Length: 145
Image (tube, rainbow, N blue to C red):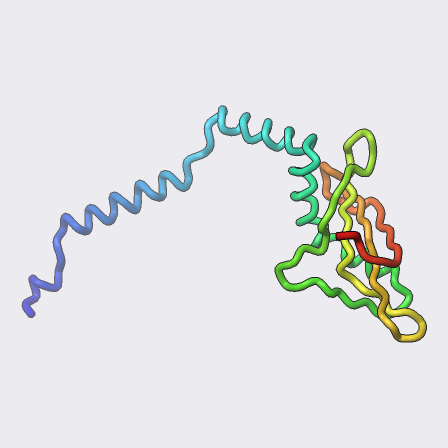
């Protein structure tokens, strides 16, 4: 193999630089004013739609609420949800003003004084704007199918 074979074509190098520059420009391009307005309108509409905000807050609740639920147990706690299974399967508006949502699940068991585990239904209220936990409630049982 000669030294000239290993150098490569200068056109290929220029082409690689041009494509890299174009990709960098596209990735760093800021959204237009119309795109920003559309995104803001979409986010505002989501806050008024129970299905949209409920699905969004169910994801946030999976990280924020379990600790609060566990604090209500007198003994041990055992989560029975599977790896990709959601902890919260239902949601509803917590108030008439639609400023908070209650997410509901039944994938935990609390140990009683005799050592047996009892299934628990838990509810977690979250603020729509801040996603902060407002209140948590529990009761024995399972959600109906």
